Every structure is written in structure tokens, then in C-alpha cells.
Image (cartoon, rainbow, N blue to C red; front, side, top):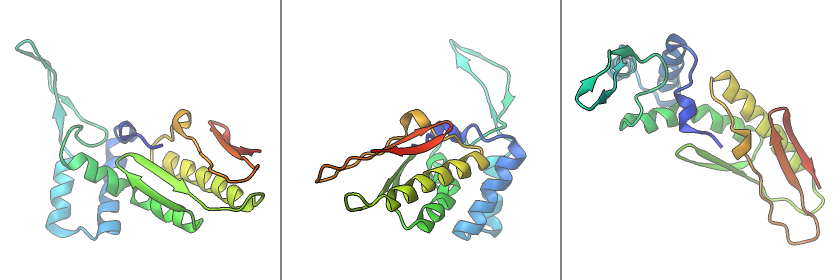
Length: 166
């Protein structure tokens, strides 16, 4: 549902750095020297291309975290921590692994209120991601249902929003 590639899309180096540092401090308690170390790690970075013995000019890295770094996945996970609070507000179960988030509920056939809650939660997740410079990949967003009786519901998510169809 959430792509690591999205993390490199963060709009604007100052906003990205401030948001990430706030999350490091507020959600993990990192402060003082450790926070200064992360600030240093996320700022004044450059990249270049090396091919056939030739190097390109240095270019400043303005967005995201260093790709392929050991800290990249950890920083991405910290950046995504507030997402869990949003999902918990809907009393929906979830788990995250790397850049994938799965939501799941248990419901009885014909009980559509939980499905509506799930739809609302997905919309709120999408809004949070937009506000935090990430994209929910609607093409890869899917809901699967396992129901014992004749009822079958499908949740479709598109750029315009999500809806349930029986």
C-alpha cells in the first residue's frame, strides 16, 4: 500500500527535515546529541554518478533519506508512526512490514457498518499521506474478504475515493 519510493518524494528539504526530526523527537523520545546526529545525517548530502571510471558533478540531495542506507528503512518506519494512531482511532486491526500496511476487520454477513468504518479509515490514511508528502498507490490498494456465507463485499479505491460494492 505504501511505497518506500514515496519517501524520496517529500516536498522540500526544509519541510522534510523538520517533519522527520519532529517525529524522531515526539514519537521516539530521541533528543539532545542523538537528535543532532540525525539532523546532521539528513542535511548537507550530495550524490553523483560514477560510470566507466568517470564521475558526474556533485548534486545536493534535497529530498528523502539516503537510498540504500542502513538507516533508511528505520527512518521511514519512524516517519510512518503516526499512521498507526489514525488506524487505531477506528479500532481496526493492522500490521506493517517495511513499506506495506495491512488493515483487517472481523464482521458478520450483512454488517456493513464496519465496512463503512474501514472505508472511512482508508480515506483518512490517504489524507494523512497526502498531508505528509506521500502517495497512496491506488493501483496497489486492494481489500480482500473471506466470508463464509453468500455475502461478498468489495472495497474499491481510486483517486477519487473508496467505495463498497456488494
